[in-house]
Amino acid sequence: MTLTDTAAVPVERAASARTVLMCRPDHFTVSYRINPWMHPANPTDTSLAVQQWETLRSAYVDLGFDVQLVDPIAGLPDMVYAANGGFVLDGIAYGARFTHPERAPEGPAYMDWFERAGYAVHVPEEINEGEGDFLLAGEVILAGSGFRSSTASQAELARVFGREVVGLELVNPSYYHLDTALAVLDPEPAPGAEPTIAYLPSAFSEASQGVLRERFPNAIIVTEADAAVLGLNCFSDGRTVVVASRALGYARQLRERGYETIDVDLSELLLGGGGVKCCTLELRR
Image (cartoon, rainbow, N blue to C red; front, side, top):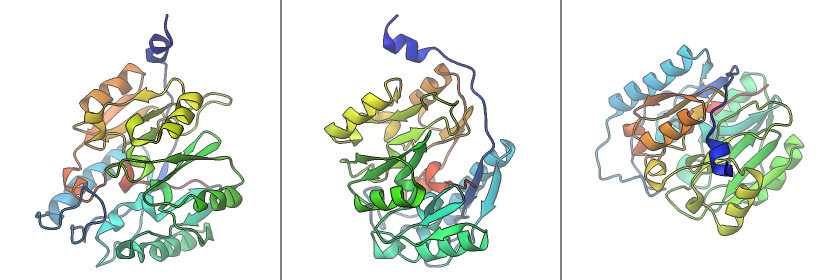
């Protein structure tokens, strides 16, 4: 049996309790352009964005997630993409410091929420966009750079959390955050077990592709077509993966590995360059 055949054998998956932070898109629109997905001249439908977001929130509630909410702020249309608001681990909230001035006020807004919720807040010195570029994979933090979060933020992240940080360079502007090009599917792998990830190789530099092949030899390799609808911008509790409805091939790959899938349509929020994971910030005590 080849390695590929071994990787495709499904195993029994176990769900773990998840606590997440979300922000209702009451003020969503596309009024500026800071990524290739955004086209301010094209119309957006805020009410549809809210309906689609509510479907996602309901899916999380049905899965038993503890869904916390941060109040949206007028004039901050991208605040719905809660994942960018920080990175929370071990009861510490490492705040965001955004690249673009249009989103800069979101950083303090999320840090205020973290403080009120009882987290120890670390105000960042370096440019970073939170869990958009930082993903926990077992005991290791995978950290993206190239478009938004600076490489200097990786050293700051390591100091704050005392964890190994593995830098990954993004090279395709359509996948400007790590969570658009890579998904961690096992939030709490068994001790000593390799967490399962999925990723799009072409989103990364050759050197970073080598790192991913070495560390995650059994990863799910996603097609360009499924990545292009932000299929990798999904969220998993270890058993069930909430995924973009148009990422049909990727959903099939997930089921072949023993995951259950729930598909959601966030097509309106995709106009701002975000999907399931962008709307979801994990809170870890």
